[in-house]
Image 1: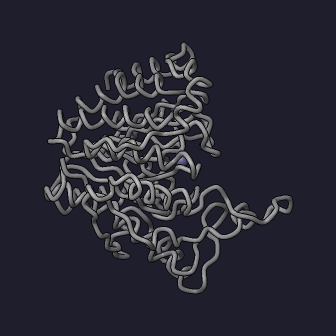
Image 2: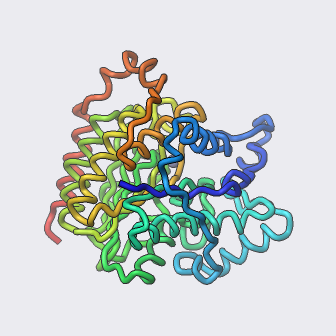
Length: 367
Ligand SMILES: [Zn+2]
């Protein structure tokens, strides 16, 4: 098994600036940094190195995508606004959309990193791959950024891969704790891309409902699984086994791309889910099995959220160990520390199962 890893030092240089500015200059927020710092992602890379796993991965260099390529999802006026602001010293395109000086180039490199990870798998350079990119992308929509996302990394890279490699069907699974609204909107009327998001219910306001199934020819090709806060491994595995797996089998994708946020981790400051690093390990194994069954193992992940700098590295390491088929000697100290505290809540609970049942019923209905 060979696994590719895309990373670039410049990803850690996307400067979100001051937290107060990020929140629109709120007068009662003390200046300081937001939870989304380069630290959590840099520490992922560092733990990969310290564990020895990094030596066993194939490092892939990203190239930025072009202005025109960004426009396969975004309006040219929006891309131009990001580029102009970036070249004139940086600023903000609204709350949660910071564009630092030089940010355009880094954001275009994040899209290019996701593209590189996909290309490496489709060209059989590696069996599977992980793009450890920043800034994230799954909240960015056609004409606006949102939630720290500037360009829609997964959506743009998918469109480019379909164009360049002649793919007819791609599935995007988003397990970030927040709804993948940008990815959803890019393909909402498109039956060639199956989008599935499992997320914390209502954590992105008014988005991610089960009833949002797609529009026109895309109806039935968008699946939302909004789990209640407090969901753990059991709920996520039920979402994969009962909703995602049958949907993927019916769709028969030629590639599975995962928008891999690790912010459903129990200690993440931005969500209220209960996953542990071993949860991600098991979830990743399920996706790997489905990729082997359906598309010659073509599984690519692109990084999204994950804001606890201590726990996120162990979650990402577990995913990459599983993808590479290598178990390092690293043991997650937080897994042991919190296991007793939350283990009783990891099993699927009735109010979570009710959501899964509703998602199954919605996905299964005749169209
Ligand atoms: Zn997130």
